Length: 86
Length: 399
Image (cartoon, rainbow over all chains, first blue to last red; front, side, top):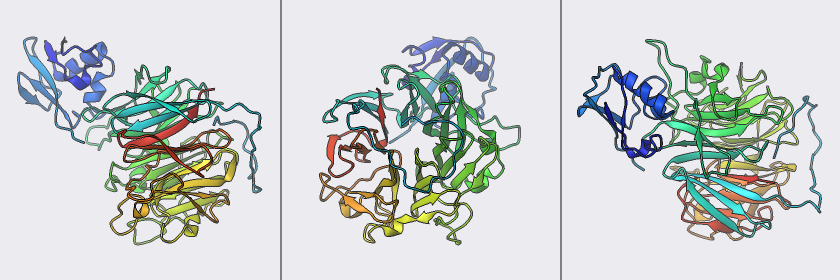
């Protein structure tokens, strides 16, 4: 499935705005992304498996808060950076 | 300055002053500057009369600390996070031209179901281990936690004696937030004994371990605590910066939220040497810097801790204060600094000394300026301006 990568994380994807990855759940997808782009998951997800405060994950434009959310190959995933000031 | 290793020696009570050889060639100084918007490296010329700025590196990221490994004078570690992203540690062997991220950054243990879990908000402090332990580094984080790497900063693991200690959140309550979050800073390794550690927690106090971090005890006797009905509790103090003298490791200093203190081990009671500061200046500030060759000489950068705590130079007149007698007396050093309307301060990691003779001193300000003195503080000159808010300045030598 297609995964849209925001600019703060493109240093991990070689500058690519969009990558392909697989996974039956959001958690699996993030694991696959981390295998392909080491370190990217920890910048989005903390050590308690919580989505970091300024990160938003969308599946087919729907906000996802549960990493166990099921995915299909036709889904489109967007990683967005929420407001963070200063 | 590279730490030595070896058996612990008896406490030195006499004054230890190492005088540099007059013919010694001066090392080349680089300043490693962490700011709110990235890191900068300033390359000094041989006479320290000019500095070339390189950077920003890790542009846009919040860089709390950049430290050169004194054991190889080549490897840099950088503690950084971006506004949106989680924290990590980055390593460079080309003075910051390229960086490799830690494979396993500092992180708490994953909590069991139903258990409260902790998350590293950022790494604040980095320090290398002794020369007898190549590859060893320590990191202090927010919330206050202690991590160790044994492979040059590539992988990190928590020191359970602190991080899993049930007293950790009693000593350093999560709700006692300093403005950027409670932090562990000033991780000090006794140069005679790698298992003897001190840490400072803001807030929480100073703590000591003599078994490589497996157990800890508070070390705050004589230190006043803010926001406590008991002015001298066992813990709850707010050390801003602690330093241990490399030639006399039983001599510690701290700049605290409540004054400047000195401790001479094996005593465990701190002596408030800030009482000897001019009353109109007070003894509140963030950093303390030691002369690497004279345990009795130190510098502080006072700030206004009156009324609502403006945390800027008293009266808008920045000045460094030096003591040459271990805090019994202080002298103002302000030549070259703004005489008025200097409304900034210097954060706890933003004041540093090199190892040259005479000693060079360097500080970075909350207003993005860098200042240096090539004559041990007698006069100052600005070497950079218009940088972002400076969080840390580390003077290192490359050769």
